[in-house]
Amino acid sequence: MTEAHLDGSGGIPRVTTSDILQRLEADRGAGATRAGALAFDADGTLWEGDVGFDLFEAFLAGRCARPEAEAALRREAEAFGVAAEGGAHELASALYAAFVAERYPEDRAFAMMAWAFAGWREDELAALVDRVLEEKGHAGRIRPALLPILEWARSRGAPVYVVSASPRFVIERAVARLGVAPERIAAMTPAVREGRLAPELGAPATYGEGKTRALERIFPELAVLAAFGDSAYDAALLRTARLPVAVAPSPKLLAVAGSIPGLVLLAT
Image (tube, rainbow, N blue to C red; front, side, top):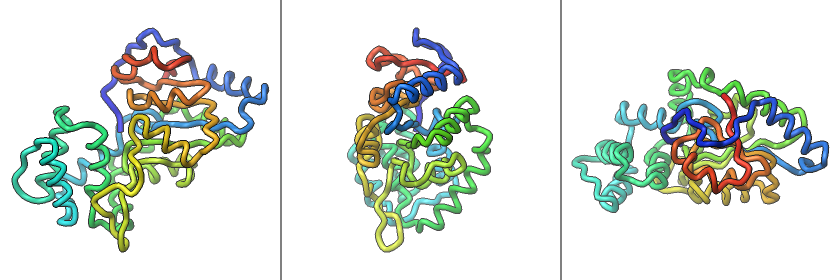
């Protein structure tokens, strides 16, 4: 999940892909990268746009919410004063509209956009995800400036991790073409019961500090050579890295740039 963006750098030093590769290679030569990894946010960072939003908007357009999600959606709407008449579809639509209007917190909204698929089987969801990625031209939205960095990691044996606030089921399929294995992904993950998604998360939320905690669970060494992000809630992830890199940063990330030592801005 990502935020609105602008072109200004906010005084952050600008670097090129070549600059980053030189820095990584120099660290490797000094032995610093021996157990290190690269960590990436997904939406707005690895690619333009947001596959989580794309999927949820298709979910709403197709009136795909199922009765299994209704009670949880109603509790969520009541907790945040979001008025809605009707069933699961109307509640999900009202919550999304409240999120867009900044009346529903990002962390709760991003989690909801994962567990609102309650009642779906994972194979059904995979078919919807693939259709949405194809219709939205996902392959053409991947940022070319990052491809040499991913190739460097592959060639040097440096593991690549992706930590996202979007639903895991869309991130897994979106990064598969980049060669990132499922076990190196942390994202919003609904619980699954008897083969169907449940209306709650099955793992801690991957938002803000939760991104760093999620990365530590799947990469306990937390030796991060470089981290890449675009949003303010990527700040904690960026602070874990020897080289924190802003990619098409949002205004909110620019506003907290001073709290991220060594932050640079990648020219994309």
